[in-house]
Image (tube, rainbow, N blue to C red):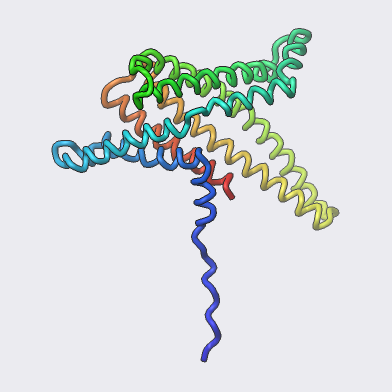
Length: 267
C-alpha cells in the first residue's frame, strides 16, 4: 500500500466569513454589493421590463428590500460618531490646536483637528436624520419626513466626504514620507552589512506594514471618490438615466472597496 496522501493545503475561510458577517457593517456591505450589482444590471438593460418582465420585477424588488434592510441595520449608527467625538474631546487635541493657532496663526494640522470635531458632530446629526428617514420609509413615522430631510442628509454627507478625502490625502502623504524614510534606512543597512539579522527582519516588517497601510489608504481614497460621485447626483440633482448610471456604478464600486477593507480587518 502506498504512502498516505498528504492533506490538501486549502480550506475555505468559513471562520473568516462568519466573523465578517457577524459584524453589522459586514452584513450591510454584503447586501450593498448585491443591491448595487442589481442596479447596474437594471441600468445597463441586461434585464429589461419588456423582455424579462418577471425577472425584472423580482430583482428590482430584491434591490428595494435590501436597501430597506441596510437602513434598518444602520439604525442608531449615531453611537459611532458620538464615540469618535467623545474621544477627540477627551484627548484635548482640538483645544490645543485652537490655542496654538491663536498664537501662531492657521496651519493645516490645526484646521483639520478643529474640523474633525465639527464633522463628528455633524455625523451624529446626519445619522439621526437617516434614522428618521428610515423610520418614515418603513411606516413608523409620517412619510412627509422623507422629502423634508433627504436633501439635508445628502448635504451633510457631502461635507463629511470632502473632509474625509482631504484627511485621507494628508494621511497618505505622511505615510508615503515615512515609508520612503524607512526604505532608505533599510537600503543603507543592507548595503553596509553591519546590521544583525533580527534587526534587518524588524526593519523589513516595518516597511511591509507601512506599504500595507499606504495601500489601504489608497483603497479608502478611491472608495471616498465613489461616495462623492454617488452623493453628487443627489446634491446637484443629476436626473434621468445619467444620474441612475452614476449612482449604480459608484455605489457598486464603493461597496466592493469598503467590503475589501472590512475583509482585511477580519483576518
